[in-house]
Length: 110
Image (cartoon, rainbow, N blue to C red; front, side, top):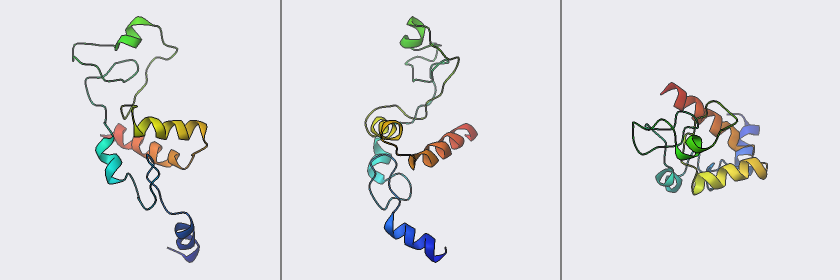
């Protein structure tokens, strides 16, 4: 690592993408315990978790028409995940985009 990168890392240390705790290279231990990854069964339209494997759609997708055909979520959007997405969208926290993009690619491969 060159001296400029080391200097930038000292001035702008890496932060947890969920709680923004300084020093975390990825997700901090506290947030890792709080984040719930979505697995099957999930809604075939929006990707939210559903209770039964026989259910094709969640209540929201079943009761109302959505403007999209298919979506996927990586995490349940509650707590630290919801706060992080809000900061990303409305408080210009673009630094979290790299983490979210990488997480999405990992999820596709798995």
